[in-house]
Length: 110
Image (cartoon, rainbow, N blue to C red; front, side, top):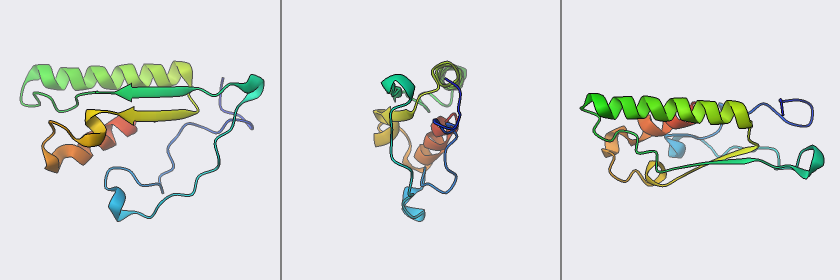
């Protein structure tokens, strides 16, 4: 389904917290609802492993592949809600100073 009067664009609200969430106030968003026919689509991305072997060509190629896959899924499915789980949320195995950069990269697809 395409965005329309019953379904807003999937673009992220620029005033909502992302990455450095502590630096921005919480965002007030409209409630979630079912679209026509009672459909509510959720896209879930887990364990993206951004930044893994970032110092190698393999690592950056994997990050770029993740970008392409997420963009394709979002374009085809046009979900009502996107959920990120796993290492990207916990920053497991990511250098702490770079963790928000990878978070920003992942959510930029939304």
